[in-house]
Image: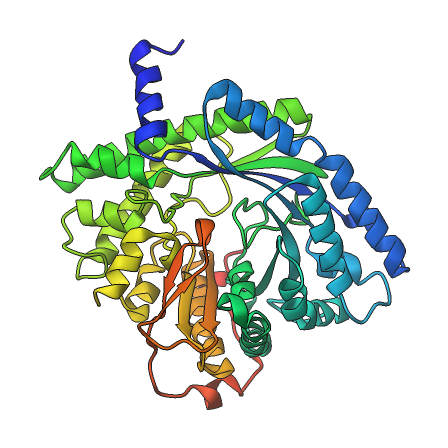
Length: 452
């Protein structure tokens, strides 16, 4: 039974500290939709999504109304489309993306993820077709998100795919030059991609998942910052304890929403993703949490240690609140979506090199990084390669969501709007990596992969 204090505390977290459920995401398997005829395959995909998710938005709104808990996004993730579309003879998969977009629009959801391929050890013909289709697919749809997994700790890094993704990112940016390269904001390159991630743009429904399930992603950087404000000057043991207790409370709310949505939709409850997902709103920032620990500005010396503590404490607190934790789980550092990160970049405290170092201890990687529009495809590939190496060697998920904004130079700003926020254009190392990227082949898996 909830006490009056707990009810009031939760009310304050929601209304004053930006606590929300960032997303309820329905994962849907499309494996049964395979068909030798492309039109028939797309019709089956559309029908399966519409039937499975027909009540998702309504249920989300009902839970919001009954419990007073904001649910910011209602989303769908599907089986990586390369696996399904390969069953037909189509040479181009743009029409599959348009089918996903049509379903998303008619359902009223915010995003649909799964225009994806898994190529960490090599390509199939369907993988090649999907990856080649990504720029046009993302440029001609509004709600479709795409991801490509190019590395794992067990397989190593597919450098041919890394090289190709540099070209894909550049093409996607050029096709959406009028919106600052918006297509790239819907594209993620992964190492060790999780199959149950509810967050976009990297969500897809893995082949080891059930036919349909509900995954929930929580948020709450503002809540954690407010909790730390009450223990100013305390030692790090106290700081870690406060974050753990706060993460526990946040996760319990997320689990309540997940279980309620699962029951009402009559599909299994999958996981709660514990990630602290920031927004451009003032106070709802991971960077501000790190600064509350005593850093003058996020990016200065000590930032990695502070982020490591935060990430670990969030996981420890969350795992006690839910037995079904998955996805990415930890702390996100998307530059354009975090007001504190934006400020740190604009004041010269935070560079892309520091962000790369931070990704060794956070949940994901280089996320929503805007770079000059004249950045070459090889340089983008090299940035991806560095991040994939971090994920591979550390046996963790890392990712790159990078936007070479057409016509923009370092110091400019790109406005994306909504949760995608404002992207300050970051400067890059001026020396080339082309000869390195053009070698191709596969970087072998590290010795730690041999654990069987």
